[in-house]
Image 1: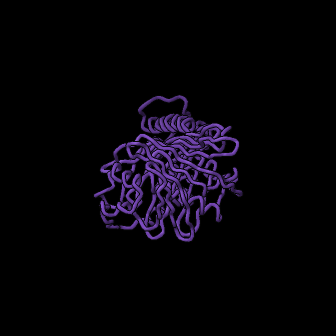
Image 2 (image 1 turned 90 degrees about the vertical axis):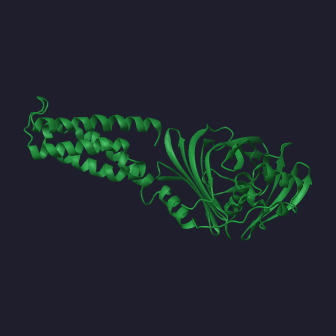
Amino acid sequence: MTDVMRWVLLAVLLIHGLIHLMGFAKAFGFAELPQLTQPISKPMGLVWLLAGFVMLALVLTPPRAFWIVGLVAITLSQVVIVSSWSDAKFGTIANVIVLLAVVYGFVSQGPTSARAAYANDARALLAPGAAQLVTEAELQSLPTPVQQYLRVTGSVGQPRVFNFRATWKGRIRGSATEPWMPFTAQQFNTYGAMPARLFLMDAVMKGLPVDVFHRFVGEAATFQARVLSVATVVDAKGPEMNRSETVTLFNDLCLLAPSMLVDRSIRWEPIDSKSARGFFTRGAETVSAELRFDEKGELVDFISDDRSAASPDGKAFTRMRWSTPVRDFRAFGERRVPSFGETKWHDPAGTYAYGEFELQHIAFNVAE
C-alpha cells in the first residue's frame, strides 16, 4: 500500500470510528445529537461503541491481521448503520472504502499472498546448524585477493554462514529510460546441500503497490511481480531463469556471506593481485564471475556473463553482462559487508544501473 493510500485510509478510519461513538453517546444520553433522529437502545448503543473501537483499532492493527480485524469492524459497523439507516446510511460509503482496504489486505497479506508464500518457505528452509569456524589454513588454497577479502570482512575465526536474513530499501527500474520505483525488501538465504534464496520486494509503480517475489528453492527458480497483489505482470521461469538465479546466489554469497568462499562448491582461478575468477556450482548449474577488489582488500565489483535479462513479461531472456559494484562496508555484528550496491546491465547500447540497494539489517545463522 502506498503512502497516499495509507493516509486516506487512516483519515477514513479515524473519522468513521469517532462517528460511531456518537451512537453510543445518544443511546446513553451523554450528548444531545440532533443529527441522529432515530432512537437508539442501550444494547444497540453498546454495539455502536464496539464498532467504533474496532474501527479505531484498525489504525494500529499489524498488516497481516488487518483483513481479519477489518471484516469484524465492517460487519459491526454495517449492523448499526442498518439499524439507523435514515440517519447513518452514508456511513456505508466509508465501509466500502474500508472493504476495499480489507480485500487488498487479504490478497497482499492473506494465506494466498506472496508474503505468506515467503513466510512458509522461510519456515520450511529454517534448520538448526553448527557451522565450522573459518581458519587461516583454509585460506591458503584461495587466490591472494580472496584471502585478504576474508580477513577484512572478519570471516576468519567466525563460523561459516549457513543462512542469513536481511532487509533492504532502494529503488529499481525496468530499463535505462523507465522511471525509478522505490522499494523495501526482505531476504532469506540458506547455504546447505542445495542453497536457496527468497527475496520479497514491495515496490511502487505509477502510484500502485507491486509485489515482487524471487524464489529459488530446489531445482526451479521463479520470479513473479503482481500489481495490487492481484494482476501478474511478470512471470519468469525456466532454464535461463535457473541459471540467472544461480548467478544471483553466488553474488549474495560473495557480498553477504564471504565466509562461504572457502566452500567446495566454488573453484577459483587467480587473475592478478586485485582480482580473481570464481566458478560456483549448484546442482546441475555452474556459473562464473570475476571479483575485483580495492587496495584495502574490500570487494568493489562482481561481474558475470552468465546472467540473462528478462523481457518485461518474463517470457524471454537475453544473455548479458551483469555487474554489482558495491561500497560502504560496515560492521553487522562481528562481520563486515557492503551496505550499498548497484545492479547493472552492460547492454550493447550502453551500461546502465537498474537497481540501487541499501542494506538496512542482516543477521547470520538465525535459528528462528
